[in-house]
Length: 451
Image 1 (cartoon, helix red, strand yellow):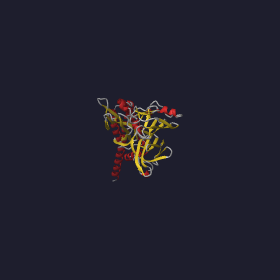
Image 2: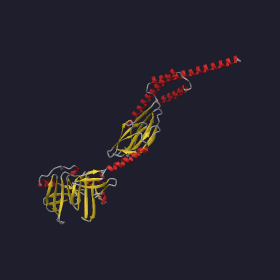
Image 3: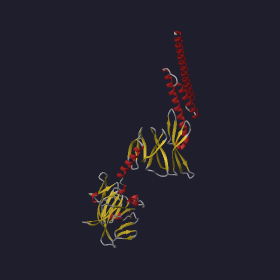
Image 4: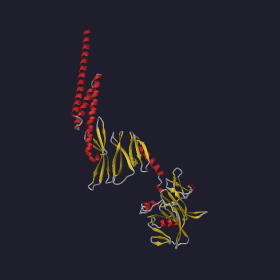
């Protein structure tokens, strides 16, 4: 019985020794194979063909699989770590060379290309333009090129016909940001999106911007068409970006005051003053206010967005509503408001006047009434194209005399007031001169610009 036990124990020990020896032999073989592979790749240099790396990757995976089946000494583990690191560095170097060659082969399409290279793969993201037979951009594609396999994946396609294009901004983390814009003309409001390079999913039209830059490793500097600048995280969710876009749009709409420009009118009845005809002319930052054909006040405009009010002249003010684009005739509580009748900025651009680059100089001051008459003797044109000239015997409009004798009743600095009598209507007409702005304004609020 003792002899039998001894024999069984002897057999178990022999089997264990055999197994350990066999495993050690496999480990040594796998380590040697890995070392040979690394040496072979090192001798070949970084300029390796993709087919070769595909075979090398397969061989590398098989070697690692064999290693995982055996227990190894600490010395062997350290050797394997060193070989793995060297293999990874060689692969990255080879993939980098291949990616650079591919980008160079793209020509103009590769000018904004982005390379993503790891020890496992290499990809190149770029935009490709397809031109029509008429020489216009017909199609723009955002493409992912796999360097190892040589395959292309179309991530985004715009059928443009000269309109929309895709431009790569840059890569932050796993997000490749891009914008869309018009190829024919300036697009100020460009939709911004990104491609998640983990799964090549497209996340488009998140917010709009005139320009976008990578401000830091995880920050985007966004410049809006209004000129406002914002710095936001590049890791926000799609819904957070869209919520920000709505917030920015609302804020900018409130700050925007371009809608104020133009001529505003009000006609109504006041229990004390009787019938009231008001006209408000806003040109740039200058306001002129008329009541029943007479100048009420004028001066440079200050806008208080928080108080929703404009002030100008001596102490004149009017409440405004930037969201609804309204101007009240005074306080908002009174309820009466102006109606916009025209935009003098737009209409005056339809002709070439002194205000738009003529030869007249502004900012002059009048020292005598003779200087005033010499100044108003120039040609002045209004938005309707009517031309007036002021002579001592009267005012001539489009070659026809419309008033009798003209008199300078006052002048101060660059401003002066003229009076004239009309052969067609009773009473005296007033004309207001502002040489600093190059204008003559009649009693109805019609503005004429010097030529």
